[in-house]
Amino acid sequence: MDIKEIQNLIKFVAKSGTSEVKLEMDDIKITIKTGSSKTETTIVQAANPMAQMPMQANTPVSTEASLQVAPVATEADENANYITVKSPIIGTFYRKPSPDKPSFVEVGDTINSGDTVCVIEAMKLFNEIESEVSGKIVKVLVDDSSPVEFDQPLFLVDPS
Image 1 (cartoon, rainbow, N blue to C red):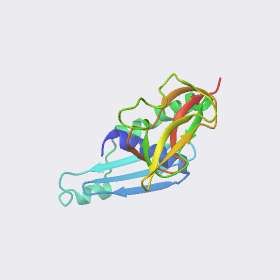
Image 2 (cartoon, rainbow, N blue to C red):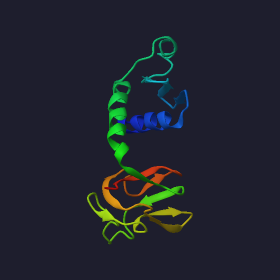
Image 3 (cartoon, helix red, strand yellow):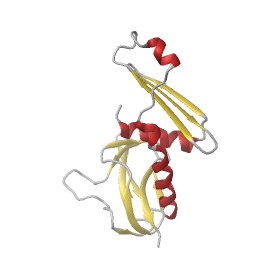
């Protein structure tokens, strides 16, 4: 699990309103606790889980992930002026209508309400996702050919 995935997990937990999330995989144990004003992340990664089992329970090790919480909040404040285009369905996100065609939209493009901004494949059906707002694309939040969840942010649009 890389730092980008951990940051995305922190953002998801902060938005969900959950007070604590614990995630355990083969050699990684992550606990994210949120309070009213701060988010605390504890990550323990062991090369040999059996050798360090007692240490994991008593001495959690913090990594840079907990330090990344403050910039995330600042970034959210900067993005407050933008409108988020979200995924209406679960599926695979595609920026292009086909591999040999150009992307529907690029950063800096001006879009109108009703313009197709991407395609999401769900159960072998390709669904064109249309913008509900007019404005300028500021940021693409999802990589091409990535899985997306319902209500996941896809684009940031500046309506001015």
